[in-house]
Length: 405
Image (cartoon, rainbow, N blue to C red; front, side, top):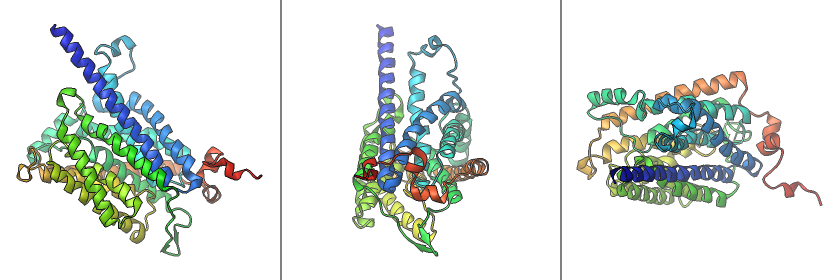
């Protein structure tokens, strides 16, 4: 009887992780449509192709290199050995792979419309195989995390708390994108003689669809980060919902009814709530999401119009800044004084945010700097003018428009 119950529990945990992995996999469709709706028509095919190829490249990189780095498990062995625990470790790899693959998908939005395909995919391999797993190993993994988090707790009173990856995934991906965007430079015609010339969004329905897919998949991203069915938390689910609501309402108010800001406001709230979704009060989650929308709208405008950084989808403010805000917010709203569950330290969270920022910027400049020197990053002016769809994939999203009757 006891053996049968243990087997059932193991099977349920495997199914739980598998369902979470598939939900997060669906988020990559959200990334793809969000980008396809934001870029011009001549770059929509490239947006869709980049994200789906990212998943394949990340799978091999993380399977062979990344997961062993972070979790000290090597899968290059007989299938009989891999099935020793009913394949639980394999499904855990699948689940955590989807987090790793998000890094390149986040970068994709920043470098859209002018980056070559080969260096983009090459970067994706190293992001999932090396850059992300090293940081994952430090905060979440089995390799360095126990010793490092024990040191952080000794210094700051608590370990770095990042339940579902505000910093480890979103903050890291958002800030890695900044060096890539800077090394590429702005799109042709984006800034003319020092003046901003905004490039219109091509397809609001695609953008909205991408946002909706991401919102739905995010509940797998957050709730199933418990990784065990017995640890599932209704608090995480409702906090994710309230942060989404806060982000949407903030997007309406601060974005002045702009649909781009509204749909991305929801994502800003979800990015920010990841870290503390298991410890904050739902009202605190709403405030976190609301502030995240404010950060995104104001920082996006400042980035584009004042700093003149052509971050096409605004991934630095959306994921980078709000990833850090989410980590810090967990140390504020997770306190029992604000009806949180406690067990968090503001200073530990601030340290985690600064660590994320520094590691991401250094790694990003090294990776994309080397790729720029070796392969080149940017399409030629002629290729960029023609569009990445024709230049790289030899077909547009609307080939019938090119047929002369």
